Amino acid sequence: MYSFSQLKNIINDYIKSNEFNKEPIDLYKPINYILSLGGKRLRPAMVLAAYNLYFDDIEKYLKPAIGLEIFHNFTLLHDDIMDNADIRRGNTTVHKKWNENTAILSGDAMLILAYDFFTALPDTKFKKVFLEFNRTGLEVCEGQQYDLDFEKQQNVSIDEYIKMIELKTAVLLASSLKIGGILADAPDDDLQNLYNFGKYLGLTFQLKDDFLDVYGNVENFGKKIGGDIIEGKKTYMLISALNNANADDYQNLTDLLSNKNISDNEKISQVITIYNKLNIKQITIDKMHEYQTIALEYLDKINVDKSKKNILFNLAEQLLNRVN
Image (cartoon, rainbow, N blue to C red; front, side):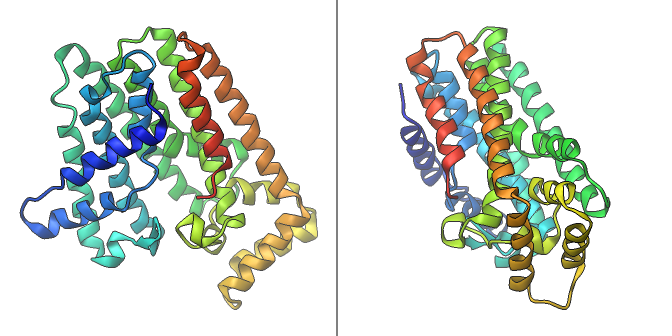
């Protein structure tokens, strides 16, 4: 069995050794740049980890795993434009380093390149993997649209928010595991349990992102702290605060978010003060633990030796306790 760090090293070595040295340079240079910034490599490693539950010859399916990583990074290029983000993984975002047109076009090229990495699959697996990938890719776009809709929507419920992050974030993690299982010809029950494990792990992952945006630090997190507060994004933490606030705190919070006459740092500080008063930190931690518990219940149902599932169990622990 491979460890997660070993899988990540294999993926990083492949990406470093297979840059897109094609012309026009200005199309492919941003692609190489975003891929070179590293990241957690969660999605490709999850493909290989799921396959490794059944077989050891993981390099046989390295290319479709890389295809998912390229797709994920394509979404980041466009997402950063929509969020007007300056920093990604501690470095300048593509649209800031070049320009928005370059980020859009290079992102489009990445989506097409991602498909190329699935074409070498044998016919017996290609259609099932391709349909899973396509369905998930569309769901990610649906999740992003909900996220954009929430910017104009005055009231967003917890259930609406969870549905959005399920589509925008969780389904790609879930699908990565399921695709690894498909490649291993895993039984249908295992495929569903892999998917559900990944979905609830993904929900935990996104809630931790919300949490770190407020209670993390920029050195570890790799992007500005308080960005969601400044943008007025309707995160789990903000929605929970609005739901739990009395009339005065509700008014103070909504006034703060719309106030353009105070500095960003002051706004962040005052919003966090209200969060602390309302115990939002602990509420969010409790919800993360709830989703992790559900994820581990699905992991337990996967019909392979328990020792082989240690890599996924450890991953769940690491994602819950991460600082970036």
